[in-house]
Each structure stands twice: as C-alpha cells, then as structure tokens.
Image 1: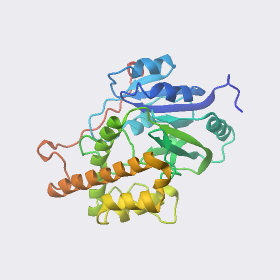
Image 2: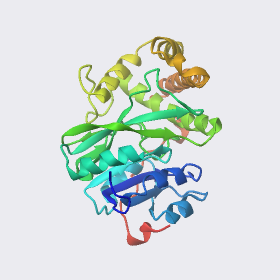
Image 3: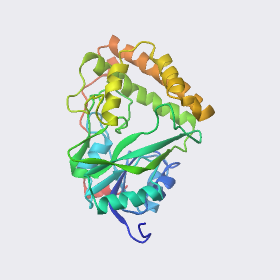
Image 4: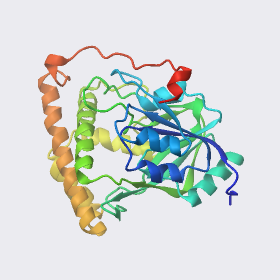
Length: 316
C-alpha cells in the first residue's frame, strides 16, 4: 500500500472542456499523483477554478483544426517532470486499488507501458456485457515512447479537438494491470447524445476511409490473432462492409453478446448505440455523395494546431 503522504511519481494528463460536473471526482481520484496537468479548451464554466483548487496546472489548448489534437499536442509540449504519464478523461476515476498497482508498476517496471481496463457505467449501471468489458486502453506509459495514431479524420468538422477513439502507437514493451479504472459520467443523456452526434461525424469519416482504402498507414494494425486493440481494428474493417448495421448492432451486442443481462440501462444503451450506428450510416452516405467532405461549401484545407508552449500558457 502506498503511504498517503507519498506522491506517486507520475504526471497526470487530463483533457477537458466544460467539465465542472465531472472534474471534482476525477481530480480527487488522482490527488496522489506527483503532478497533474489539465489541458483545457477555453472552458466557459468553472472547470479552471475547480482544477486550480485541486492544485492542477491548467494549460490552454487552442485548436485550429487539423493535426495534432489535444492529447498528442500535450504529449509533445507539456514540461512533464516525470518519465511516466497517466492519461485520464474527466469522466474517469482511478481507484485506490489501481493506484497501488500503478505505484508498484512504476517502482518496479517490467514494461514500458501498461493497458488499463475500464468499467463503463451508464444510467448508474456497470455495462458489463455486450462486448463493453473488458475495455483495454494504453493509458500509463513512458511519455516519450507513445503517440496517438492519426486516422485521417481531422478534416471533418464538429468532431471535437480531442483524440477519443484513436489508440496509442507505442515504441516499447507493454503489460496489463489487473485493477479497473471507472468510467462514470455525471452528465445527463442530453450530453451523451450531443457527444455521440460529434462522434458519429468522426466514425463516418473513418468508415469512408476504410471503404475507400485511404486510411493512414501508421496506425494500429488489424490482426485477428493480435492484441485486443488489434482484434477490434480487424472486426471494424469487416464491420464497415456489412449491410443493415443499425439492426445488426442491436441484435449482436444486445442478444448474442448478452447485453440484455445489464437490465433496463443495458437495453437503453444498446438501443441508443443502434441509433448511433444509423447516424453514422447517414453521414457516411453524405460523405460518399460529396467525395469525402462534410459541409462541402465550407470545406477548406485544415490548419495545424498550435504547437508552441510559453510560460504564460501554463496559467489560465
């Protein structure tokens, strides 16, 4: 057990925008870390005030479209004082049991990076079935050795300024931690739907890239016999070619993968995910009509995100 008065020598990276509802629980769960950075996108709520009250360093990220997005920019530019970085979203929590494991993994490293498993909660229920668990993400690693993949979706508008579905390409050995991190979003269904409307823009462009063979070469490879992430990428490449995907998504994940065992929240979740799949399909059709560009009349060459960090930017 890590003594409460000792900080774990890891730098926390938290991407944020208007997250005053989720931030207190998130920041409380990482208070044992030696260093915490909140990378903010000009929040209009109390996010900055809350972060500073917990001792986090607030850095502003100004997105101009294009690449890099927020996490890669932070990995390239923040002055981390620790070799290890732990990436935590605002709606995620690091449990005390996981902290004990993280502290030991850093003190006695057998690998250069570690996958963390997430428990996703929806309407107060752990969505354990329907393929939602295990949910492995490479979140703890030596920061100089990993960067998020570019899936060539950045020219599509209204997808946000943060890497969400991209995975880390890592130059080093990786292991898996046993204890779970928790994904608990305190925001309501309105915000869930709003967020997934943005995500469906991103997914539609990814589907378009996969169908036309224009995806970026330097990405996570698709491999049925590889890691869990590589298997997901393999099934995604098959999935984009299937017909009736909204219906298939509900039938496969709710019935065949036992999503019905999660009760009414599970039913609602997979009905919404079926609707989400329909949104992706509609936006994919739009992309196919206009040569891979949304808002065709407003399309322009993406600009590069700001990549210069100054001492002043380490404040609000």
